[in-house]
Length: 224
Figure 1 (cartoon, rainbow, N blue to C red):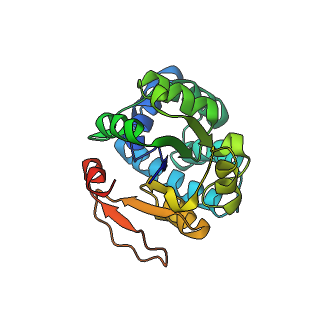
Figure 2: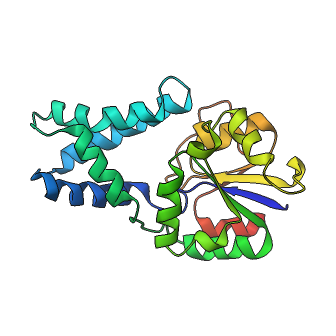
């Protein structure tokens, strides 16, 4: 193996904890008492919206225009959801919390392979978060849907990555990520190896089967 495509959120950075901390910080600006029930609702709706984005049904901008207005309407808060989204984006750029073993595995992979990010997000946000986390320097390049122009799991996203990798060879490439619907599906569709990070040990009921399945990041060393 020569080339590693590595997902960010819920693979090396804990999205749930980062989002929670960011929401609570933004809530201070708006005087909102954000409850655990509201956070659970947000996480559920956010996951649904990103799933719709992966399928090409909505745009990333639709997500940002929808998730907080929908949340505050549901709970009867007189808060401008678009303004709250702006505050969220500002604070989220510096938020990071490592998934267990993330720092060690990023250092390990970068020392042995050509390591790249493959993420559905905003390029500025991911650059800022990885820089804050001290991990940016370990990646040769960040491939983010915002800059590629297409989202995982589309073939266009992956082809946009491949054309920027020197001496690229599909046979020597693997994607590592937590999402069956974007990382594993995308990898299968374009014919590269796939490694599913599945710490919660959920059942795979999709047609897309990973070449490898791990429950902790240190297990990657047994594969690569």
